[in-house]
Amino acid sequence: MMLLSAVLVAAFQTGSLPVQTVVRDQSRPAATASRTTTAKSAPQSRAGTGVAHRAIVDAGHGGVDPGAPIQGLRLNEKDITLQLALKLGAALKREGIDVVYTRTRDTLIARADRGRIANDAEGDVFISIHVNAANPGWKKPQAARGFETYFLGVAKTEDSRRVEEMEEESARFERPATATANDPLSFILSDMMQNEHLRESSDFAEIVQRQLRRIHPGPDRGVKQAGFTVLVSAFMPAILVEVGFGTNADEARYLASSAKQDAMAAAIASATREYLERHERRIGAGGAGRDD
Ligand SMILES: [Zn+2]
Image 1 (cartoon, rainbow, N blue to C red):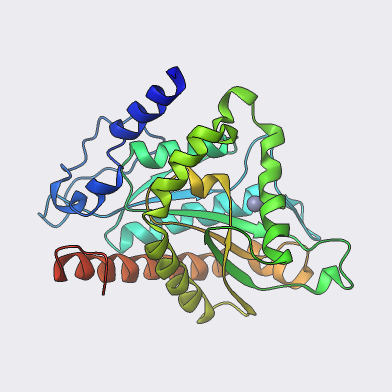
Image 2: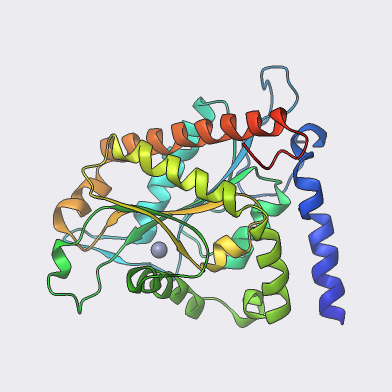
C-alpha cells in the first residue's frame, strides 16, 4: 500500500501520466538552471521560444559494471558508451536540442535510476547507448557485426532475448535497494506509462537505423524489441542503440575511433531532430495528436 502511493506520487511528480503527454510540449515551463540532474546543459538562449526539446543521453554501464569487453583494445563497453554519449550530447546541442546526461564520468548508475533522471528532467526522448557482444556459443562469434536499435517490448527472437539478458546482467552490480524495477507493481505501472510511447519509440528507432545506415559499415540489423529495465523506467519515447559488436576486431576499432564516433553521434543527433520535428507536426496536426 505504501508502495503503491509512493509509486503513484512519484508518477504524478514526474508529470508523465499519459493524459499529460499530449499537451506537455506546449505547457511545460522553460527549464530552470536549478535542476540537480547530472551535468545538465545550460538552457539559456533557446531561439527565444522558451521551450526547447530535451534529450536524455544515457551511456550504458559504468563504474564497477564494465559491460562487454572490446576485442583487442584495452577498453570496455562502458568506455565506448561514455565517449559516444558525450559526443552525441554535443551533436544534439548543435542541433538545438537541450541535453541531460545520466552520467558524464565512469560511475555506475542503477538502470531504474537512469529512467528516474530522465523523468525528473522531463525529457522528450531517451537514448541509451550500448555495445553488442556475440554469444561465444555461436558458430563464428567473432564474425558478428552491425548495429541495431531497440524499443520496449517482449523480446520476440532468440537474438533479442540474448541482448536483453546480456544488458540486464547489470543488475548484479546494483544494490538491491535501487533495483525497484523488479517489483511487480512498479513494473506494471511503468510498463503502462511506457506503452503510451511505444509507437513514437518505434518511429524514433526506425529513423535512427536509417540515419546510421548512411555512415555505419553495418550490416543494419534492424529495429528490435526487448524488455530492458532502462527503457521501462523512462516515461517518454525511449530507445536503446547497440552501435556495433565489441567482439568483432574490425568493428571494435571502428567503435573506438574518435572520427567514427563523431559520425555516429552526428547521425543519431540528426535522427533525433528529425524524429522530434516529425512528432511535433503530428501533435500540431490533430487534436488527439496520436495519429498521422
Ligand atoms: Zn550494454
